[in-house]
Image 1 (cartoon, one colour):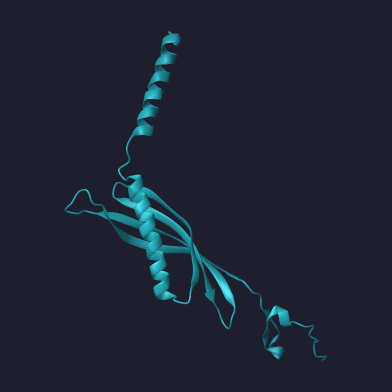
Image 2 (cartoon, one colour):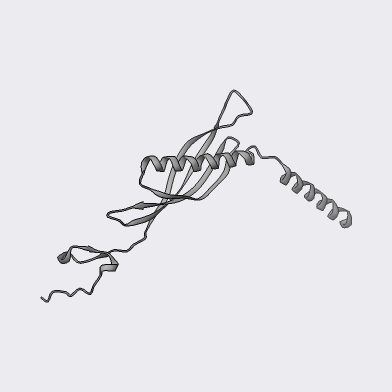
Length: 155
């Protein structure tokens, strides 16, 4: 009896796994790719409008996943170089996520995805050049190249 049940269970599991792997998703690969491209374009345009002095925009990661048949979650991170006070530059990295939903259209062959929410979660800044901050009695900021030993006044 075991010789008959074991192969039967194996065949049932193989058929089930074949069905799972070959089931077509409600949201196709092309849709994910298109949403990622449009989101990257939107990030670039928004950054240019809000921070025109920003340079070297680099999209580090954009990843999309379906939440339901009509919703997609997009996780993204990007970085850019920004000038701070004087001639210093800093690299800023921003991570976030967006939720998009499919809006019904008259033409069923066209998918229209609308941003429902965008949220940035993590923002980090790394300075390309260091600064030395001295005590209040010597309240000047000195760049590392011009740093010399400083003697403390004797009290």
